[in-house]
Image (cartoon, rainbow, N blue to C red; front, side, top):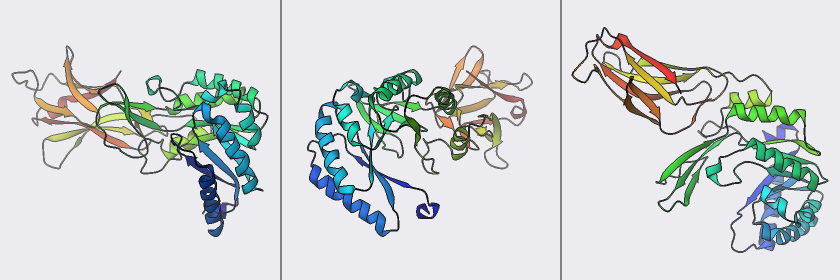
Length: 334
């Protein structure tokens, strides 16, 4: 499929940024083997990109590696990804002088407590980067979310994105909301930094990646189309002929929508109340918990996330007397 597109292919290889020992010769040999494997499959890479999130102190070693690698892969272009933390190093200029092009990553580069993406910081990093390089460069923007888990000592135990890691602890969902990124792209197009050649989106949406944007949302952002969320909540029969009903969220829009913080469960006055004032038993699931306040019962969001465009999620259930069921209404709120 890639070969049939006729488009130039960029082969990107990620190197573990936490390697205790960087064996440059062995890594170069492996990279050349990967390039040959592509060619044997009928793929002709136009460039090789190295994604190596090394510590700033290792930039001289990394630059020497890139200089040697470039002579071995010629005539392929050599590109690299760069981190904002490198901006403070005087060694960055030497590295960027070796590469034919580069990509600045502005997402997931800080303490997770600060979030996945900050538009103001990203703009500042891009302006600084534009002053440091004389070659074409791209900016990498997020189209995904991550679940960060902290252990009992307050340290990061795991970062879960493409696949579940099943690590216990205190967790937080971080998201790059489509509307936020669409606004950022609009501002970027109005006043692009010097030398900016385009945007690299991470990650390509797939059906089994539940934290990536939906394909329709991603395409809408790419094509600069208006994002329309279509969230609605309703009661649906769990099983025919049974009193149990599911509380379901649907998103009929073209944009992935943030899950609502509260779903109010209101019971009509005509329904006969039990000793506790409720005629229905209920509970929340899939990131929602059932709680009570002075206004009655509601489902509270306990785990932030996005509901993909065109998707549905069951967030709770109700079991009511037949007389009470028609008097139940659901309201979304903040």
